[in-house]
Image (cartoon, rainbow, N blue to C red; front, side, top):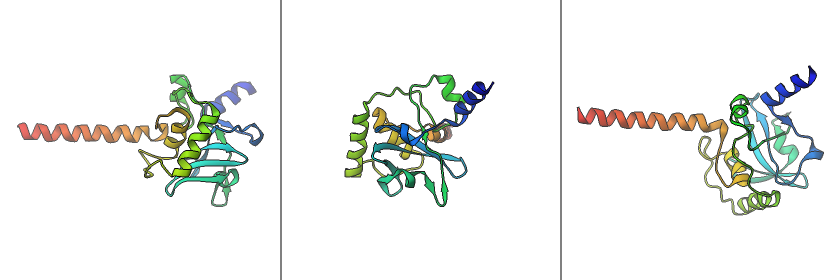
Length: 171
């Protein structure tokens, strides 16, 4: 029974990562604002994380990455290649169906290059955020599960608006 409860908890909230289990190239995250969203980064070794914030691509210590004000959050491990059903059942921003395509050293190198060149563009909560950054380092694709729904809604609203304008102009 305890194993079933543990599996359900992992499915709902993700794996808590132990510091001694971290490996360079790991995509990690913490919950923020009472669990309303997740903050993502790439562990690059020696106790440091490279992550994307409103001020650009930053390198910070693990403790700082996990801290929000006076609150310290658990460190969690983002998972790749999850089956579609699991992806839909888990909290958004904790996993993806995308395959993990890069070797750990490639991931670290990509994160360091983006940090040194501050080359990930302007921060945008919906279209270019910390999850996009970490997923890009791991897969070469910019993707964010936690903002995908907002982005999709925005596209649909734009399509409806364009259709309505076209309809009004032809009638």
